[in-house]
Each structure stands twice: as C-alpha cells, then as structure tokens.
Length: 210
Length: 210
DNA sequence: CCTACCGATCGGTAGG
DNA sequence: CCTACCGATCGGTAGG
Image (tube, rainbow over the protein chains, first blue to last red):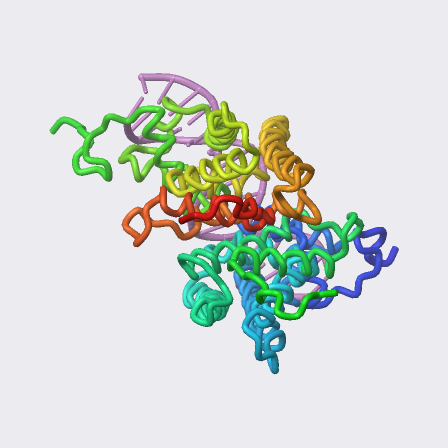
C-alpha cells in the first residue's frame, strides 16, 4: 500500500545531487545535451521529473557543472604533471599522458565537454572556452620551447598542439575498460605519439646504450 | 500588394532541395542536430516551416543525406588518393592528406558527421558507421603493412590509426578560410604528422643529399 | 509557397 | 518525494 519506490531503475531511492549528475553524465554522453530529456534522467533514477529539482537547479546548470568542473580538472592535472619537471621533453610527455589518461578514465565527461560546450549559455560558455584555450596554449608553449632548444622540430607549434590534443580527446570515443589495453598503457603510447608529432629526436648517441 | 518574398533572409526565393540542405548544414554544424529547429532552417531561407516539406522528406532524412553522402565521399577520396601508388609510406601520406583536406574544405559536414552520427536512426546509423569503420581499417592496414616492411614502427597500428584520423577530424574545429594557412598547407603538415606517429624513419642516407 | 492546426513533448513551477 | 499543470515549442500534416 505504501507508495514506496517499488522496483525502480536504481532499486534504492538514495537520490542525491551526485546521483542526478551521474545519470545526466551517462545520458548526455550518449544522446547529447539537446538529445536528452530530463524525463529520461528521472526515469533512470526511478523518480518523476519534478523531483529532480530537489537535487539540481535546472538542465543548463547540470551541463555547466559537468563541463566547468572537468575543465578545471584538466588545468589542475596539467599543473601537477609538469610540476618540478625541468626537461621540456618530459614536461610535454607528462602533460600529454595525464590528458590522455583523463580521456580514458572519464570518457563521459570528455565526450560531453567536446560535444556540448557550445550549448552552454554565456557567460559559462566563454569561461569554459577560456580554460580550454589556456590549456592549449600551455601545450603549445612547451612545443615552442622545445623547438627553440632544438629538441623538437615542427613548422607550426599551434598545428602540432591542436593535433596532439584532439588525438587524446578521441580516446574517449573508443576506450573500453574491458578492452585489450588499460588506460595507463594507452596514455603512455599517446605520450609517445605526442613526442613524435613534435618532431622529437633523441640526443645523438654520445654514450652507446650497451 | 503581391505576397512576394519581400526582404527575406536570402533575398531571392530560389529555394531548392540543395538550398535547404545547405541551410541545414550550417545550422546543424553550429547547434547540432537536436539543437536545431526546422523553423530556424526555414527562417534562414525566408520561408515558413511547412514549405520546407516541398524540398525534403523530413529532418531525419536531411541528417541522413548529409552524413551518408559525406561518408561515401571519404571512401571515394581514399580510393583515389592511393590508386596507382605503390610505396606504403606514400600511400599513407596521401590517404591522410586527402582526409585532412576534406576536413578543412568541408568543415560543416565533418562537424555534423562526428557530432550527430549517433542521432541517425537505424539502419542509417549502422550503414554510416560501417563506412567509417571500413575507412579506419584501410588506414590501419597501411600502417600494419608498413610495420611489416620495417618502414613504420608502432606498438599498435589500431591506436595509431585512431590517433591519426581524429587529429584530422579536429581540423574542422579550428580551420578558417581566412586564416594564416590554407587548406592544402594544413593537409600537407598533417600528412607529415601521420608519418611521424607511424614511426616512419627515412631510409638511411645511402646517397648523401648534397 | 501559404495559413491553420495537430498531438506530443519539452523544461519548469505550484503546492503540497 | 508526489500530482497537477503551465506556456512554449517541436516535427509534421491538411488542404489549399
């Protein structure tokens, strides 16, 4: 008789802001922001649409939180990756590895950021694009620095940084946790790809390797 | 007095199926398929929404035409690019150059294919994904062949082909016709990036270059 | 090419 | 957490 959640999609009714965000994350990643109805988010949580508003401010706000938080983390990842590392080659390698790793570990967020950032209303859109631009310029700066030092060889550091970053983004499109390669291994190889694109050539063999 | 088009968005009322597709192309590329209303397409053409149906079968069909036609052209481009070319390095370079070139010259189509292919209903979706998979496997095959011949050096041809192709796709995100680099120049450099990712090492210098 | 109109669904609010 | 309900808008059709 009691109107309990019965046999809902999530079974237990411990709906929280985090649970709403997680359900939205999955649906936005698959169908896109405009392709997802809040009624679908509610259904996945086993509640009615209006009840969502106890846990969020609105659909747009949900997107904003996902995209802004992810973008902040990308910048934090970068800072942590290059901190205390002097060599420009290693700085680039680590920066790319951490970026690649994030796209394997947080696929849904990555897909949403790249697909739906344009659906954010101002000023949120501009804020996020600024963070992304800051990150791209950091990578580009590493490449430029390496070129000046004679460690890298590219005609256009901008072209190389665009290419490297988008290569990493694509990981979110195909990576599977149960696939043949784990996230760390993928990240390592993409770090290597980045050095190749940057035209890294190992130092001439002054001391033979064996 | 006559109810002529007046001062509509396109001025002249020569609306045709191609004009509708072109207007949709622009809007889908900017706002996404689900983010675009047919009323916006009509407005850009200076007509009312129902009049669109004289030139198209429906919104979904519009997306299908755009995505399927583009995917067919990608395969045709590839075939033409490698035809008659024997050397595997040159085959990869040309295949990537033509793919990159398409993403600079047909930015709207590329953005829509990559963002909205998931919004196609079956069986259209599967057909398009099959074409894309065929293309990816062709690129992967070139890399594998080069590895066998000792011309390329990668741990995973699949990882390399994913990275190379997505790098090219990203061109559609930033390329501008009035930018500092023209499409051919961008394509040439991405062709070079592809060889680098594939671990291409030029033949040892048997005949010195000068 | 239009006006008039359809049922469906959208995000969101009122008020418990 | 719910039911009841809102105005707006969606893609699409009827019938000129």
